[in-house]
Image 1 (cartoon, rainbow, N blue to C red):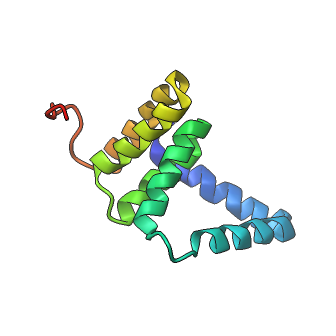
Image 2 (image 1 turned 90 degrees about the horizontal axis):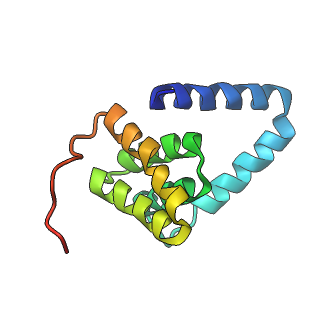
Length: 121
């Protein structure tokens, strides 16, 4: 399944939930807006944190939406991948495998790069 298909599935799910479960969906959306609205971190940083949490949670839909959000907020490919590696650091090998959909999302959303050797730090 492509990143674009996952994003379409999220939209479809939210449309369904808004129609058939409006109270629960509104409550979740309100909580999400409040949690994301705090002024201490900018949107780019919050989305990068969400990328890391998505990788650690092993949620491909979350990865798709938060990679897209991070890019829209100005994050670079390397910043997204670095956020993913923070999840790997804390969550281990299973999280490493979820860098696959993270990389795919970056590729499918047209972010150049990947595969180029970088100097070791």
